[in-house]
Image 1: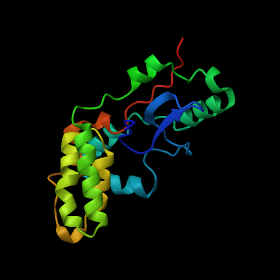
Image 2: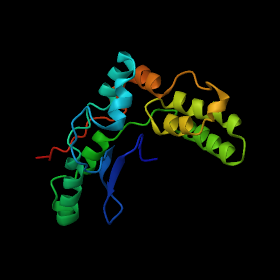
Image 3: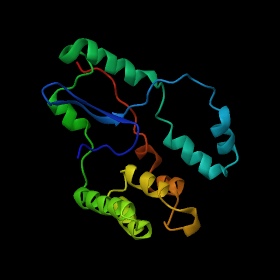
Length: 183
């Protein structure tokens, strides 16, 4: 309902129930590591170059992970006077427009969730696929769907996550965070 399409996303709602920042990428601060270190970097280095290029493009906008927390702390300390609080017109302007079929996509996803929880995981697959097809920039749908696939089923979706990101557009995975104060 709020337009959250991936994790980690954050949404600021004030004490009066007003959205003062729309859903946006909200990484928690983490210690900066050299780009090519750790077990994840080792796994990525073994991938074909075209898959590494997709990962690089989909994570290009992450940047400094401490920025979001600093803005959030400022809002907690200063409330409505924080320069990061947006007026309603800017919240709307920065919000992701919902595609006309977002409601249908959400219904398909919920049906898939229900079937999976009810012991019919294979029957959930076409509903998860339909949810992503109807709202392709909502990465919550395929991330959840892919995590629920039993490896013994073989390939049940047309593409894996990286192929899907490449097809839809890597910049939609973690859109750039705009924390520039207004005014």
